[in-house]
Amino acid sequence: MEVQNAVKRCITASAVVVENGKALLIKHKKLGMWLTPGGHVEPGEFPSEAAVRETKEETGIDISLVNRQGIEFHFKDAHTETLPFVIVYEEVQYATGMHIHFDNIYLARVRDGTAKLNALESTDIGWFSKEEIDKLGTYPNVAESVKAAIDAIETKRQ
Image: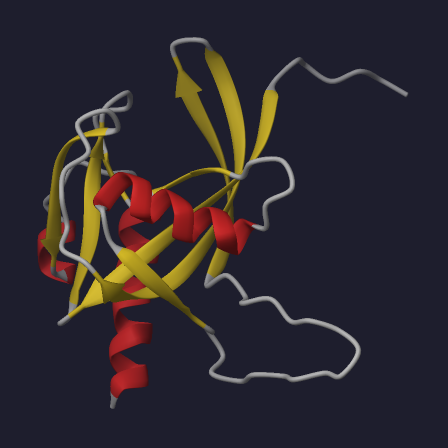
């Protein structure tokens, strides 16, 4: 078996938090780009738990994840997990080298709290409409997934 390049591979999770037709984004301190709150899944943690934890750490907001299909299953002998809206495979260039992220992106709504900047994680925070997202400095996949998430959440409200 051939050994591949020593590229760090990570499971990450993030949340597109939508309220009143706008998504909450942070300006990532290390990358200098607008992103959804999120980060690495810790050992023993489900991706859904990481999305909730990271959002709280980075924004001060408690969230509720939204099942992307609107269908819930209840089993007597097993548990179900909230499905990500999308899972994105992306290469992220850090100063320490290339990382490959398998990002579980969840739909979310505010459960409690008000957005606050966490200066350890980001340099700015804000709520953005689909039109505003196109004008921000972010990655194309982030812009597209956030706009699609806003549409999905707003459709669920109707």
